[in-house]
Image (tube, rainbow, N blue to C red; front, side):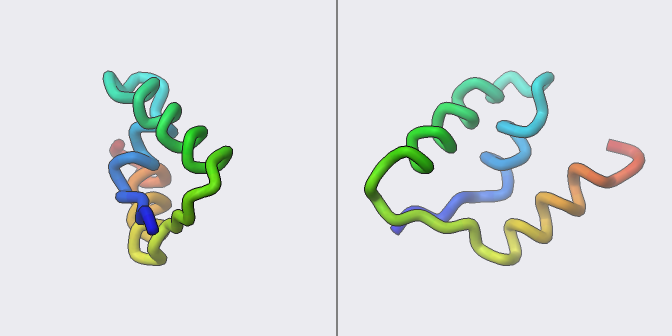
Length: 56
């Protein structure tokens, strides 16, 4: 099983990230593939905390 890290989610979300294309491609590959994967609950929490923070 592949567990996604918060950074991959943030990089895929942020278009200004230098790793945006690689992170987005990773998410697409996992979503379209047959291998099991998951986003751990703490990573979901961290992702929302980061992308909704007013200073970031």
